[in-house]
Amino acid sequence: MACKDMILHETEYKIIKQIASDHVFLYRADIKRIHVCAIMKILQGVMTMIPEILLAEDDEQIREAMTDFFLDKGADVLHLTTAADGAEALDLIRAKHFDLLILDVMMPNIDGFTLCRQIRAHSDVLILFLTARAREEDVLYGYSLGCDDYIIKPFSLAALFAKVQTMLKRAKGTVCNNILKCGAIRIDLVTMTVTADDSPVTLAPKEYELLRCLLENKAQVLSRDQLLDRVWGTDYFGTDRVVDNHIKKLRHALGNAGRQIRTVFTKGYQLTE
Image (cartoon, rainbow, N blue to C red):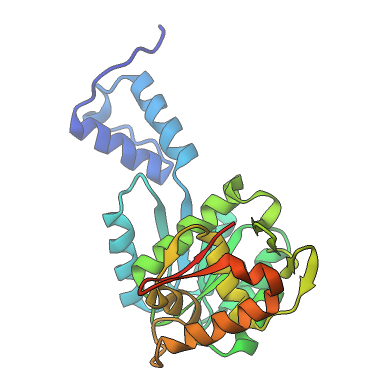
């Protein structure tokens, strides 16, 4: 019999969504009357479209806060699984597919750096480091191991959620071949090389992160506070003038292409074509 469009009761829909999210079929009395076609339709949509995220973090409060925040965004937006240490995370990674991993660097049993190295031996899954280690040498070491991005503790849950969404969009092909480009400015995210007007540009780590942030949000006006949170982390206690100083250095390094970084009076900065 062909499947036709049908209306499900809210309870039925919730049950099927739970089955799909757990990837398990439960043969219970309360789902026997649900039409098999409806189950297959919803399972197909849930299991193929909702990104699977793994958070490996030993701080229980952070795990709970992130779980609540992600759930508030909707169970049909992202599905978050948590692990309390690196060993548990590794077991989950071996047992299940994930689209993105959020790894705390300082975890018991297996730390984030070691876990990243093991994962990169056989997988190119997206990896986001969550860490209080804000020193540039630590950040650069993480990138050398193959991580895709960093977020510094303490952090804004909204900023983290936005970063996760941006990384997932990029992986789906919103940014092709790991290239970010706007006008004459181009970043290769794999080799971490920058060019402007087809000439190589050497940037300090903070200028690189600033440019990457602007490219990932091109045409959008980003406030100084937003740039501070995303590049320096929410634990930075200096003034927002540090953003202006690094933007000045970035413009200078980019040469003529630096004119693409536009100052929006009283608002912030915008990268234009």
